[in-house]
Length: 553
Image 1 (tube, rainbow, N blue to C red):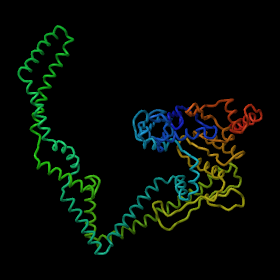
Image 2 (cartoon, rainbow, N blue to C red; image 1 turned 45 degrees about the vertical axis):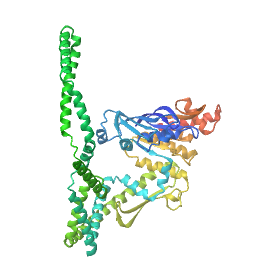
Image 3 (cartoon, rainbow, N blue to C red; image 1 turned 135 degrees about the horizontal axis):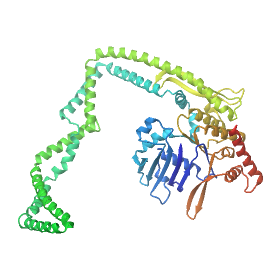
Image 4 (spheres, rainbow, N blue to C red; image 1 turned 180 degrees about the vertical axis):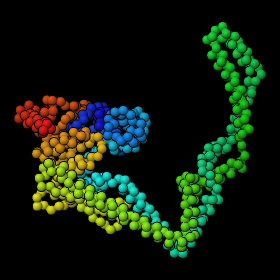
């Protein structure tokens, strides 16, 4: 659950902190007041793409901080990010240069970590998501999500990849003798070129480290001799003078203990000078100004650079490519024998894949019926008296990484009307309610659901039904909803008004928590009632009372 959200310098928000409730949180305000900015800020916090253009004008960075309860996270996630206790905080900053910073409980992390956590914390539904329902390609993923086929699909893809790999290997071996010889010649040439270099992993980094020293060895030697000369001059009278000063200081320290540290510092300085002289002396002996040695090192660096340009980004990649070449050469050298083995392995893998595909189909077939029943159950109370919903499954005949099944959602909202694909639904209100039903069924373990104008295209009685549905859903999950509809706002358990204020050349957004009388006045405003109008006020009060009475039943 999201407990609070603090937003600074985000779009037209200078500084806002919102304390959320556990149930249905409603955000209202005039068109263009900035309601969706709060949702965008939450998305930014949870890993959505950050645009430095959203930083409030005149500011160097924007920041969003959220406080969450940890009850919706799995033990694996809690352990992974070291989260302990009932709550934790997430924070993200973005500066004008596009640099991101992210934290979990004040520990620096990657933005990808926030996105990983966010997937288990909040389920977003924005207006654009309506469009995904029109794409049949997304329907299979939704069905698989409902069926809980994540592990099975991962296993199936692994077997499918193995099948494809065997096909590719067989195709490579079944090439003509001329193609085979050309491939062998190329592989052997490339392997010989790499092996001649006798590459050692990390060798290029060692060369880059030592080259600057070798290139400048002449100047370094001259400078070292100068430094050593200065230090050597300290011997004799200078050293004796400092030694006498040290003895005198030690005697003084016996009387005044506060001088003890000064004596120790002088003694340390003498020892450091002597140690430095020894270090510089040894350094001179280790400098190699041999031009021939430098040329060899530069030549070796160029050879390694060419190898990386041709065979891999790093020397490790080059060595791995050499191993791959050896495998290809070995396979081509004994291709006749390998072809028979590969055909046998491919046939076996094909049978295994067909068996797994059939199991997937059965699971999906059962899940499609259960999903259709659940969706119908969820959306029937939303003004669909004669609704029908089905999931059509078709076998394409060609197995892919998800099997050979194509799924499509079919829908009919009226008696006597044939089932049609969702893309043929003309009503935005119908698709909004259907999306709400899908979200309710597929919500998973996320503790918070966000709806940005889920009520698009509906009004009146239907709006009242949608509001009640969300309020019922909020008994088990925290709901955050941006709405323009009074009937939905009346169902809120915690209401917020977002307004935009202009002052001189600046614009500010204010988020105000509403209680009691203010909630009634806001719902009345949304109805269109003028300020002080008794009829509008009473209508708003009745809507709120009706929502509460339904809740108590």
